[in-house]
Image (cartoon, rainbow, N blue to C red; front, side, top):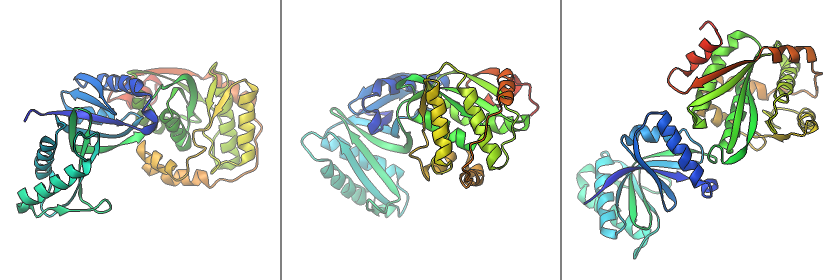
Length: 371
């Protein structure tokens, strides 16, 4: 049987009309990660990547947004016998003794129903792999999923399946948006801004140099998803210690003032109605509108998922800190100190990093920080 393995990328439902941008991002991330590939092309509703090393390629691709799931799959012709035979063989190789398995087939069938393949493949596995003692599971209860997707001409039988990050492809919205990273909430907010397809300009704001190592680690989790090999970051030292609710709100307000100095029309605000009172949010929105800019609230519809996003970018150790930030309640709208903002603007340092394994050290070295 003539078969070949591909990385198969399944776009999210929101990315169906943005396939060309997702393909472009896939090519970029593979080049950045030094993964060799022969082609990246569309086959119906999925994207096929013919990569030299499918395992490392799939890992690199799954940094991107706009992906529902990603598989490494065997490709066979879309006919009943070939598909059933390949699912049986792959299933026999993947299943461990006594495991419950579920055969799931989706996509476009010709002359048969996907359900027919599921039933036939399940029966074959039970019969031909009886020595394993493997038995069928249910949609709600199984140890291993044997997934197959059918396109017009081919079937893709999965030997590895991973969940994607969701969202839509980066830069599928053409206008640039500025976002600031200064703590855990702002990092998740910037992450969400990217996930929603915005092209971003990232600035980093800190109150003291001891914060830079943690901020550099956070940035290192975010910038690979931008699908660019060269990233420019602007750093500002804002001499306001964000300790306590009042000072924290003052710090956040001052960061907004710094962002408004950029000639970028869209401003991403790290403000969630779950953590900030409506007066504070409304005041921030008015500030942005007063500069004829458009405010973006990426956290507006995010609830507990915010903590899941935090884990996604390596902040699981900081969950308690996030919870503390979300417990802050205050109706105050602190008055901005123009002196502090003007001082911060003068401390601007621009760092250009070439994405690689040493991003954290490269950032700190560029800032001449001891680490």
